[in-house]
Image 1 (tube, rainbow, N blue to C red):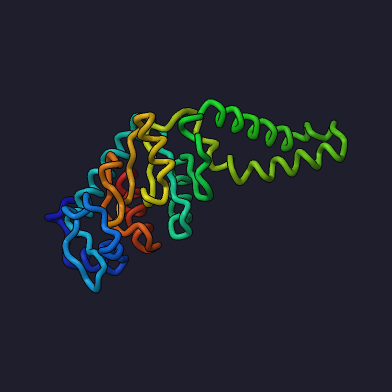
Image 2 (cartoon, rainbow, N blue to C red; image 1 turned 60 degrees about the vertical axis):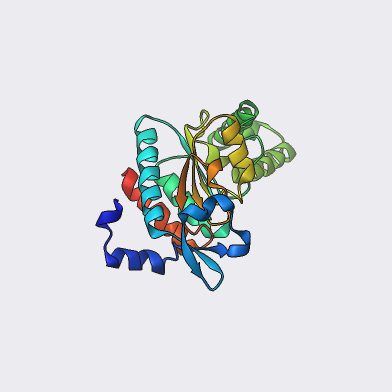
Length: 227
């Protein structure tokens, strides 16, 4: 996806998806200035060439990571990102987080893994009818526990070991996830907008991280690239 191969039609398509629209200049992060191409009505415009170059590099990294059997953890809890994150994670049978980042998913992985295994075991026993030996009250409690844990743990079931990389939509929104990954030296791929610090991310993708159309476009290209 080299810059030279981009046609006017493709640039128009990206513009319609809102990829180049950042935030107001008042919240621009100083380290983002080299990746901006101008300003319109006080809104920062991300340089299209930087978007394309950074996306190509991120796709190459993710493709190589997954080809080597590495797990990628996909993270996007904003309403605009949830559907795309779930889609790409399901496509590659990867773990994902679309509700709330649980502190310690990475830095306290041993404890989380224990809870995850407990959930999967309890769910399997329920499916096999092995919980029928308990009293009705106990079965009801197990049912409530499974229902509560499903929302938290079901999407993390493929996380059988620490991820080889994490993908994040909006680094600023997911500061805890970024901090945990950096602490463990887990490579980070993230959609970075004009208000984010690109220095916190190993493989930034410079684009609008708050519009659904932009997020869908970026993740769609990543899916295509990995396939």
